[in-house]
Image (cartoon, rainbow, N blue to C red; front, side, top):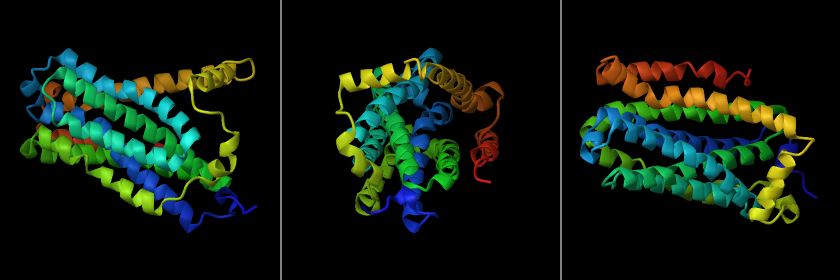
Length: 286
């Protein structure tokens, strides 16, 4: 039986290729997730769709909420059909949601488009991390995970540039529609990115996709052996994500509307807050 990719003693070119594709996918994943936060401040989106502050809050939360569903769904599909095809599907899904956002005619059509984006975002996050974690050597797995997470910083940086730089003259509709171009990444992934050989080896032993299989997995996580660690991990993640996304989603509005900063000043402040993530992002890379 040939050796697995994860059994190499040192990272090889193939490992860096897998990381690169997953990393680029995560950049645009995070970018699409954050773009609305900037467009409601820098463009006429709120006025054009006659959105109240509460409706904006619901829209900002819609993609986040549906990303959880996307992670669960696409993670299960990746177990059944493979990491690579589901990764490609998630990029197409969040790109389609972003494109459809540009055609919105009201609050609920934009809500539906952002929900589609969220499903793709959550799915890409789950599948990309599984693919990288399964294929890189164990001794650099933490480091490669931190490299992958750095895509979030670049995604936020790009969303700031587009949101405060290009969107005011492009308009919010074109900003959304042009942001669907990362779907072209799927062509390169299909041609050059390998499947997880660990999944290929074990695919016949994985449970079939379905509600029953998902219930069994959740029941196992809630069982006596894993109940404590599942609860602690969930609480830690829940409070961490709540604090992070509260700040991140409303930061552009806070800088521009509450503090009265110009678009340029708000852009620079948003970029500086992104740079604060670098030490934490690469803490496991040293």
